[in-house]
Length: 316
Image 1 (spheres, helix red, strand yellow):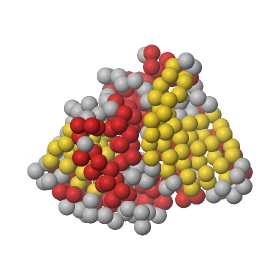
Image 2 (tube, rainbow, N blue to C red):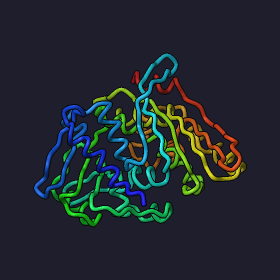
Image 3 (cartoon, helix red, strand yellow):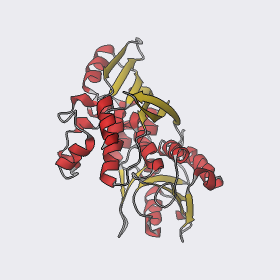
């Protein structure tokens, strides 16, 4: 059986061997748990962000640096692919676990979710549960976790606290912006799931999204990061499904179906005071989606990159 925590642990070891190269900070908590900081106090960049993306996917996918032209604005991109979409993206990379020991809160993603089964409905849907004696979790946060967080994670995952590895990422850091753009294929799969596609039929997934310039303001940084996915993200999936079904889903999948399409994400967020429950969920989708039928080889591409919004987002 594919163990995404064991695969991710191998990548974590690479960070621990070369912290200076990756520009990350490493700290051991009293429980023995390990904290790897990629962007709170540390200055992790492209390399740390790419490695964090791979770790978030449970080591069951790749992330590489690319480059693209957005109407004259040339930006680096993250190119992501996986041969295990349901497990790597929904079983690991999806931010589906709120870590909340007393006095601390962070959004958790990564392979440790597959040990704790957070949330259970996701793992029931993809029919997967990991077995490992090590737990690796990515925490999107602006403050370092207390030792109680390690115990909280260890208990939920059924491992010893000293075998817990927490990788910290921040939206206002370079590594953080890289790993958010590295969620483009997961973002597309999330949209396909909402539209009723059986995730177990998705055989392969790939895509890319621009890495937006870092902004010191958390709200604007979040807006830029979302624009990278919503207006600049391109995805492609090979699915064991009939052509008619894929054609219909492809037409509904891109972000252009959102009622607020055409505004920057920061404008949309600000209008609802960052209450994401008030936002049309169709916003959280890639700009372009291609679905290919594994049964016939027919492909259906819908949506387009919105270069003007990308340029507007970076200028703002």
